[in-house]
Image (cartoon, rainbow, N blue to C red; front, side):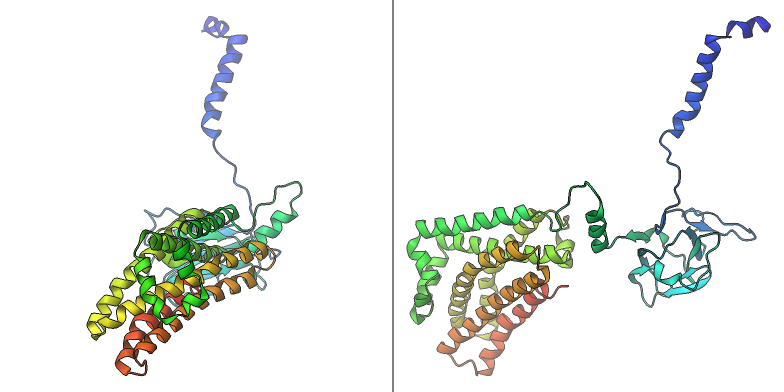
Amino acid sequence: MRRVFKKYSGGNRFFWLLLALASIAWPLQAQVLPLDQKNTITANWLVQEPGATQLVPYVAELHSSHHAVHQWLSITTSQPFLVGFTAKKDQCLFLNNQLIFVADSAHTYMLDLSQHVGNIEPVEGKYLLTVWHPSQHPNVSTFRNQVSVRDALQQLNRRPLTVRVREYVNQNAFIIFLLLICLLYGSLKVTFPADFSSIFSLWILNRPDSSQDMYVRSITWSGILFIVTFSLSLALVIAAIHTNIQHFLLFNQLFPVSEADITTKILFYAALIFLFILLKYIFLSIMGFIFGLEQVVPLQYQEFLRTTLFLGLFLPVVMLVYLAFNATMPERVIHISNLAVTLLLVLTMVRVFDAVNKKAPVLNLHLFSYLCATEVIPLAIMLKLIVFNY
């Protein structure tokens, strides 16, 4: 035995010692030591087993029958501690056994925990957050940290020697699409001068006998190109509005993309607007058949299309205002953009009412009900989705 140990003495013993230490340290190289972070909620939840005096780690599959789940938090009042979560009805939150929140309905909530620690004494510098429900197991997996955008930007500006990130995402996409729209309008003016003049001339727009010519031109390839250009213009303004408010539930539900993907959003809006304009004639035909007013449908659609395309020429100007002043006056720019979209929709409806009234009195209750069903109600829906969705 002594000879065996001598055989592995010296350099060989040192080699095997290094190999043993490496085998022990290898599985630990990916581990990160837990840091005591302030105002941060983690997934390290705890539960209390029956008869136990200490909290044990929470495992969702094993502790699904517990009505209370806990977590130790380090909270400082020098900065907000925003926590977002989805709560069931009657779900309660406690800090050191003091009630701070009760959910009145099943909904998603956001709570600033730093505002509730003023009269609560910490336990060894920490606070015990308890999520409790009287009859069900609380879903603690939905708890997450919420960061205020304004605070994040302020912290970013205070950091020395860092590159400042744009506050408004992907402005280059707006500029590129605006240049594309201007090129399309210029190409249409050069290629189809007669059609361009028939749409964007105030004298022809106010001429009562030009609606039939406009309808004939609208179904040609030049008319389709005018509609495509208008769809891109309106989609650009709507995308700018919704990018600023960073929230549009309908779009996220139908076609979820990141807020930074402005190009996809603009193309999606443009496709929706283009389909809406083309399918409106089918909608008007159906409603005209139901109300027995088929003779009003061509005039109504002609006036709608003519006024919409004419007012769409001013949308690139709105985008220029957005790009020029959005960084300094974002709230005013949003109000201007919303006002522009509202005026486009409302003035189109007024022009349709005026054109139909020249052919038949709008005071006729039957005709007025038809116009309300085909113009006023769709206008209210579009204003809700585009302008008043936040």
